[in-house]
Image (cartoon, rainbow, N blue to C red):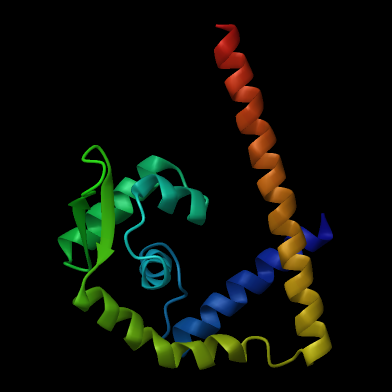
Length: 149
């Protein structure tokens, strides 16, 4: 499929550009920290749902972030069976340091005019909705299979 190949090529070139500019793309740990800035106190399950990643991947990210003192885990005061993930001041500082990189990241889209950016945002939202529906239907099918067994 031509579009998939072009998209893969764009991702590769954009990562190379970001490396040359000294910027790490916001992936994994950085995305989790940015989510916590806006939604501090999420549970690991909520993080997985929000970031569309499996619980094992969430646990791995949390372990790394906790080891580097960027987050801390605390027992939920209302439900002691739940754990809440909180961003530390060091984690907040790391997110603040990412701020200047935002301009460099936005530079990747400088070839587009505002109407094209709006259209791209719409298309990305549409793709995400389609992916969410597909994931939900697969989860529903898996649950039905589990109930049969």
